[in-house]
Image (cartoon, rainbow, N blue to C red; front, top):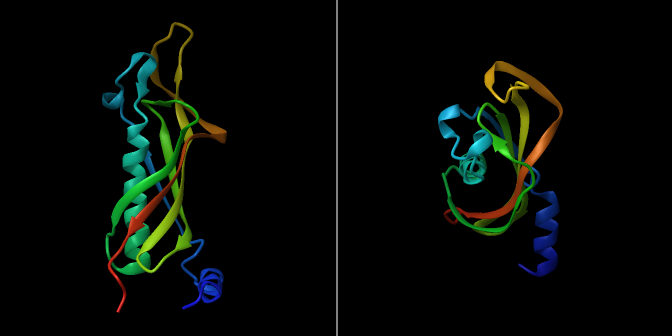
Length: 143
């Protein structure tokens, strides 16, 4: 297959642009830092989960995460947040898939004027983009 053939495959393969979305609540037990902050690695673990779903949908295999080429921590994650994590396939190789990831805070617990957290929370509109990344997964060769 020539480079030109591969480019045509990239633009005609219906797997290109496929997305998967997960939502999850971050419990207060996950807070590690003052201000109920949660480490950014929490989002990376969720990126792995949504990448696994895409691998299953496109290749019938869970695949393996190979690397991140870019990770940006753009806003804090806090206990009480509801995260929406989205992965999109942006490149298809023979065995590799490049994915773009975004973790958005769609709901957040409210902190009172006294600095305490109760059960009050709000929907964020627009959502806050907290973490973005680009990563590569690998899957078994197709027959």
